[in-house]
Length: 167
Ligand SMILES: [Zn+2]
Image (cartoon, rainbow, N blue to C red; front, side, top):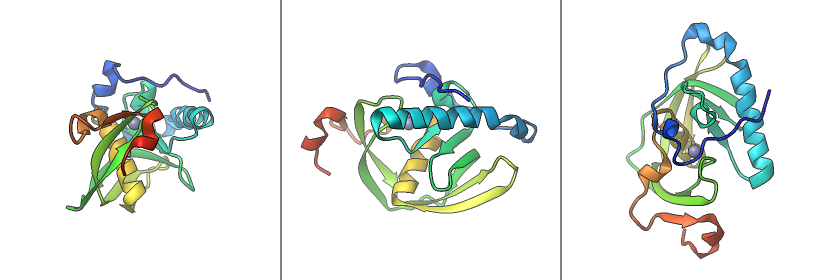
């Protein structure tokens, strides 16, 4: 268990697609999941935000996400399906660029399918906050950052200017 260094915007690893987790690798994932949790909790203590973290953000190039929900989930090989035609815009943030906000559009609802650490396949319907969060996290596994999904050239803001932004 350890707090790992979070890769920051500009690190080329953040743009590299991740490899699927093999079934034979599941049993060995616990240490990485612990590190993801510890790193996220440390970030929350310092920044007061952070809902999930993708393995490539700590340099582990595997399709794995730790979601700090109740209960917390380790999502192995997550995929999103049934992305709604309806979208909504929001100011997104990321632990890999903690001082920057980016305005993006996300699907309002989707279906999340993943494997848990015991190898069970799990399906969840997501909407609103959880839907946009998992779209952000699954993008990380494809090497895509929110900066690449900016709605337009005015969709960037420093967090310190948040009070001046319109919803
Ligand atoms: Zn992120």
